[in-house]
Length: 310
Image 1 (tube, rainbow, N blue to C red):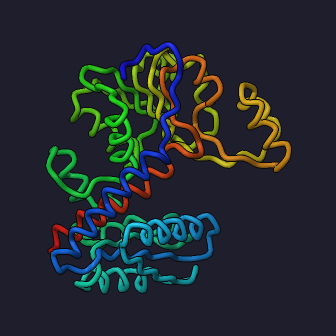
Image 2: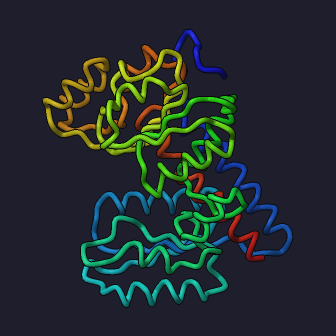
């Protein structure tokens, strides 16, 4: 696929996630056929955040689908840092655990960076440890952040040739923005990182042949910000409850607006999907775009970690 198509294509993240999970399932089967145990993913859930509980359930269901063992460790919201650190130390030392995931966000009073940096780089299936981030910077093999890795896989599957492409990454987090920019550079794209303090943000976005939006601001990117024929990857997932905001950002999506009026809240991305479909050559939807890819990327990393550890 090349930017500049006549009609926008929906990049179906769910379908591609299913393809990725099938590869993982086959990898688990091959591993067990060699007499090795199934990979094991330890998930640490601290507190009672409802969204975190949903995410953990979804991850456990995906693990079951591909034959990965899911080990859940729940801690109360008042858990001290020392207790969380001690649990991570035990999981690091446990040879029956291949991957460790600390579900974010953590409750107030807990230092997420301290927890994430404590995870052994060999078991850091989120790809957040400084050692794994450094390997990415050097262009060396390692456990890479799940969301950008899966986004790159989606683009490759759809034949997006990144060589020489002008890519704009909207967002600068260690989870998506920065690693996404590095992966695009690795594939010879010309990359600009933009963010909330970028001057004339709309004009910067309009230069993009590939626009990756990952800022967590519902409907920030309007159709007028998108270069005709661009490929748009919307990483944002936001819950919209304000009627005025919904009326503005869903003006081009009557079905989404109807759903909002019926439910009082809907999920949307950082891009105004209806407007993007009229301008871009390809767009990821929200939901059903990048979200399913993140879990598929996580389980891909879990299998990789297990194979590297023996």
